[in-house]
Length: 478
Image (cartoon, rainbow, N blue to C red; front, top):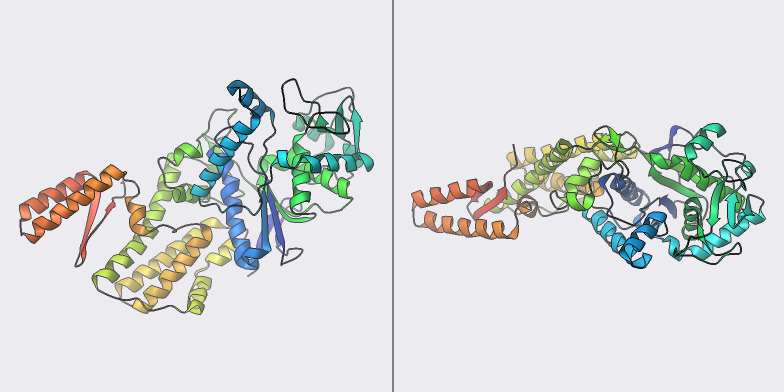
């Protein structure tokens, strides 16, 4: 099979062939760090982390370079810092740390690069200078603007005619603009706002030029894949494309453009401006990160996804089912004093291949089909376990783990997974009750043992007895 990805530019799914298989490059627009990110902000994080994993599996870990930027210069950041009476770095450092912690909890690998706007200012100013020198930008009244008429391909990514782009961009109307669609590359800072020196006066960059400069500095042009949410196609990615091509006088900026669909709540796009947000930071206090990750991948990445309580509960149940298979293997192997044989990696690869999971992921990240393949792998492990075919158990368990790990799942100890819903106080109480129950059973005090079992059931705990002792887990909610 060959990895195929849907390209927004060509409106088609194409076989992915990197420019250089030893240096595969991907850039994804990252967070603006002024508050905790909502769960909708994390859909592209999880989607493109999955693609990062697939690319690494296909081309090798060292060959894939993934950059996800950080916007740490922004009006919202300025307001937050002013309200708190602190430097902007105090705000951005705080929320970038929280963002990275939340992303890690959702199983996202750290990108190869995480460039920040404030650390790329020289490159931004230099790129604007090239655009001016190339006749694609002009200075006017302390501003520098991109001349959209200088790029013949303006609008080809979004497929919008010029009048729609002018209306949809919500650009400022200003008498010094040559064309209504022209957009800001550099602007004067307001009083008490951070500013940087430039040939056009002190100020700060516009939003779009930041990503173009970071891509050029960190990865070089053209890149293989540019990703982000569907809302970024226009104006952000359209403007990035125009700037990048005109600054470097190249025909191709990104060879594939990938965009994930909206995460919706109550049938509306999740956004802070609408007030219909669920913060990932808060959800992680209630649900395991893997369950949230599963929920975000439950639908195909290009389709909109409705965020509901049932979606995440179903995700948790799906993972309970797979972790339950692993827990049963551990328990039965331990209780029967079985040593699973060493597995042949070639057998594992063959089993993984025939499962269809890799083929599903290579088909434009078809996660619903990949999840079905995971369940089939789990069923195969359980079938071999029931038949006490220990070699098959070992091979199929290894294939299940490799498949799940490729997607960022089943990375916990299964007992810890099921006990994770209990806080430390509950865990200590359960362990004490299980120890007391073992003593009662050893003394053949069956009424006391039954009484303790009732107490455990009241704590929503299921006890699994075996020849070598008892294990426990928090029972799945009905």
